[in-house]
Image (cartoon, rainbow, N blue to C red; front, side, top):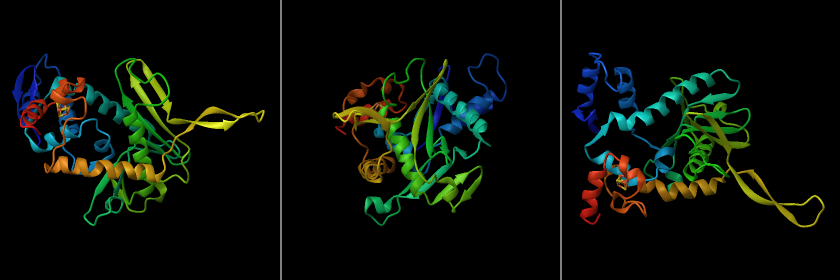
Length: 290
Ligand code: SF4
């Protein structure tokens, strides 16, 4: 079930009624018609399981959103919409750069990975695939000063970049600039050299390459020393993640089995639960021991 109502300044509207109201161009409304339309479109449920769904912090929320009516607030969706708008702007800027493919959507079927016959559609849309250089670049929007300071990007962003890498290599269909391609080789680098997450906040950009620490021989031949090298996961590592999570999100979205709150999120206690539009449904289910 979709988002059936939306609040703005504590008034409740259906999505259609909100757009009709904003079409009258009221003074002092917190958003314009175009922004509200963008916000609603960005929250339209998708009919595929994506790299984003597999790396979401709470798969229970995805299941509850898909299976209960819920209300969002325009004010609460503002930050997410701002990220979407900046993505569109960056996508436009990236078009025409040599070898750079912005915002293509890659599709495949992971039935074989899951060891079953029933179709298992899976898709993802890396922000940038640099086919010439063999790189994936993702943009993430964060509050000022909240980008990771040391080492790697946040764990879910590392997972998403690696799932996207696997997907690019195993895709059977690509949607790009309004065309669907089944000849996908042109979207696939020969080799992967780097994956990077760029955190954007109100002050600027912080690009961080995904790396791991390994031991390399010292120049003088006396033992080894730690060095950081690009971390591109093996197919096996990515496929283990798909086997672990795909059935969980699939059952959650179908309503067959809504997972329990993640450990430490019980009783809606995580900070992100404060912004969750299905918080009431989550609590009601939990009260039934589910
Ligand atoms: S309230 Fe928290 S634990 Fe419950 S579905 Fe929402 S995010 Fe997940």
